[in-house]
Length: 491
Ligand code: AHR
Image (cartoon, rainbow, N blue to C red; front, side, top):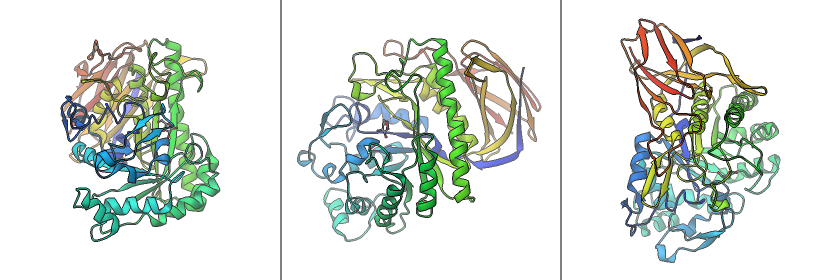
């Protein structure tokens, strides 16, 4: 028996909806084909943006979208992507497959996409190969309301009103593809670049500095010490790779050992959040600076026969479990983690959507984001859990992953994942300071390596879950192996 307690009187941090954010890079078929097909496409679109994908992402509750990279961001020159499409410069996407980038998707198209999605844009500026002036003018182009060279150019390009852009990153992975910088050097560069990324009118930028690669704690220390006062957020990148970077392992057709190894590696996120958070606390005890996990997710070998530079991979129940445990961790660390962006929205890495021509499917990861949606902007509740261990040897861990939050109307959302590949979990949950008048639940459940294909798009999908008992302050249920459940408890 797994004993679980939700204390409704123990109200903790606000869960920023941006924790449920996504990332879209000019990489493979994420932007082109996945999100943008162009106005002349036979695929139904609004100003070139795929209707089916936009509708699905809206329904999932996408709160924020990061663009244009990734490594692409530090090679991207925004001026090449505005104005008449036929005049836009063409370039080779050297990072990702060496394909031609025609810049037909640029600033106007991205901000239109965010408007159609009803989400916040999160723009990543170029430090690695761009100038301070170029970054400064991009902010002016997007947000200045008045007469200025960039605002006038924006108007000439068809957009009168400025956009509101809040989230703005100053470089990406500047310890690697963004310029191979040392932390001391980047800290100074960040201070300089962010100075000229101005707040115009009532637009207030939330400036995100490039943070560490996984467990590079020195990077966090140096950035916080030298530039902490100039930033609103510090990023963190961590990918879950079951094998090593040369042989990552397949996205499907894996065995139970790979299930446990992958989830164990995913759970390493807990240590990263705790240790980077502790360093940040020592410089910023008031937690003013957010930890922004703007790249996370599973990274496998590409699907056989696809371009290795396109990072196209399938998505199974293992990805769903990884998403569930990671989102539960983010909820638990929401006092510091105030944004996160899964890599990457469509057709790249751990996507929520896959497309094939005019066809589209929702991955198991999509359904997890849909189930967890009610946590967005909720208040984290204190919980405790006694649970069994599952897995083998080094790859063993707690069977259940959980988090609970309360919304403004007093409704509780409980999300729980059973991380065992084959054993169900009996759960007895007691509710402190809360009597539930009613409960409903949805369950995502399938064998550990099941996935949705274009031949069987609905293999993995959520169903109503009614196999529970609710008596006053006690909720009992059996969560099947690999099951992910979301309960709504009415006050
Ligand atoms: O998401 C793919 C790549 O991973 C991004 O471009 C880069 O930032 C990271 O290394």
